[in-house]
Image 1 (cartoon, helix red, strand yellow):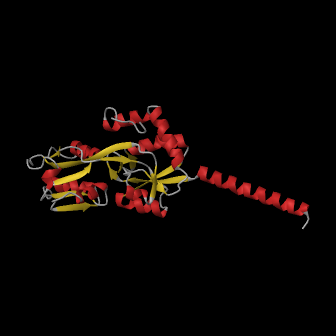
Image 2 (image 1 turned 90 degrees about the vertical axis):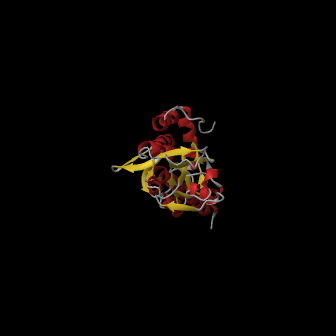
Image 3 (image 1 turned 90 degrees about the horizontal axis):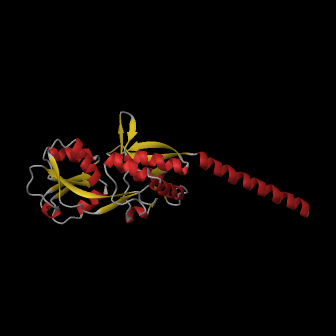
Length: 258
């Protein structure tokens, strides 16, 4: 084969490869991402009247705009989110996903965008439970598969930890005194106490541990870098504080990345 023929073949192959690279890049840029959210995790993500609402819903809207990402929200149960990300049913999850070592073995996280913790909720007329030390011999409810379930299961002396698919079931069991306490995310507990507790519940003790929420994706996701940059931008331009004040009141004790 002459050099001229080989040269033409090489040039042709180079042009073809460049075409595929550009095409792939355009496809990625135009792709509509499927983003998993939890259907009942107030005030972070929830569905109401056919509309997706919550702090994380609005924060993600701002982040995706900065990152130039098109998306479609996919509400589901919390127990379905991990499998949905792993299987590719959704590209990302933005649903109070706690950063922890077990998840880091299987997923990649964005930079954390929210600091929270777990708290104890009990009946208003319960004078026995004042801290986690008083949970010995008690029945504690929470959401199955959550970090709260893992934490409660590790406490010494608890009689039983009951896990429910939806945290609202745990709250209902507490209100009718079928369980002694609920352990769960402090913001969600506060929301229930104010909007659904009917004066029958109270928060006791200190925050049990600190947790961070972040966007979750499969390993080697090409979107996390852009998402991290966008998180930094919405913090810097004041969007984060505005949304925080809207959904939680006041200012965050610590801004993401600070």
